[in-house]
Amino acid sequence: MFAALTGLGLSTAAGLNAYIPLMVVGLLANFSDAVRLPHEYAWLSNGWVLGIIAVLLVAEFVLDKVPVVDHVNDIIQTAVRPAAGGVVFSATAAAAKLDNSAWMAEHPAVGWVLGIVVALAVHLVKAGARPVVNATTAGVGAPVVSTVEDVSSLGMSLIAIFVPVLVIVALVVFAVVAWRLVRRVRRYRENRRARAAAADPGRAP
Image 1 (tube, helix red, strand yellow):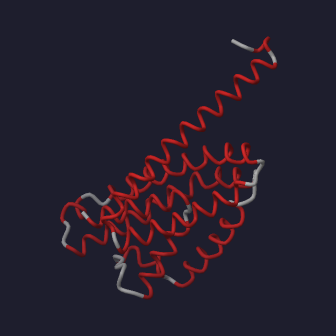
Image 2: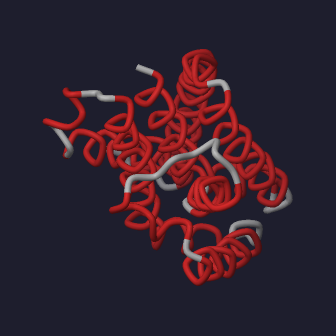
Image 3: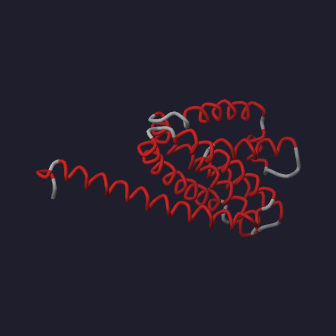
C-alpha cells in the first residue's frame, strides 16, 4: 500500500520535473536507509548516474524558465518525464518485494505502466497550461510558474518517501488545480478563436 503511494507521488513529481524525483531517490538510496532499491535499480544511486542527472536537472531548471524555450523543452520532455515516472514508480514499488509483497512480485510491469501514465498525465496538464501562462503574462509568468513546479516536484518527492499517506491529499489538491487549469486553457482557446472569427468573419464556420 505505502509502496504504491510512494510510487504515485514520485511519478506525479516526475511529471512536473523528470530529474528531481530521480535525484531524490538516488541520493537517499546512496546516503540513507530511507530508500531501499532492489539490485536491478541500484544504478540509480551510482555516483556517475547522479552526476548526469544533476547536469540534466540544471539544464531543465534554466530552460523551463525561458518563455518559448520552455515550450520546446516540454515537447522534448514528453518522452523523458513519463519514462522517469515509470522508473521511480517501478523502483520504489519493486522495493515492496523486500517487504514480501507477493502481488508486486507477480506483476512487475504494473509499476512501470502506472508510473508512465501518471507522469504523462501531469506532464500534459503542465505543457498545455504553460503557453497560456506565457501569453497572458507576456512571458513574465514563466519563471514564476516553473519555480512553483520545481518546488512542488521536490515537495511531492519528499512527501512520497517520508509521509506516503499524505500523497492522497496531495493528489486531490493537484487534481483540483489541474481541473481548473484545463478549464482556463479551454476558455482561453475559445476566446482566441472567437476573437479571430470576429476579426475575419469570412473564416468563421
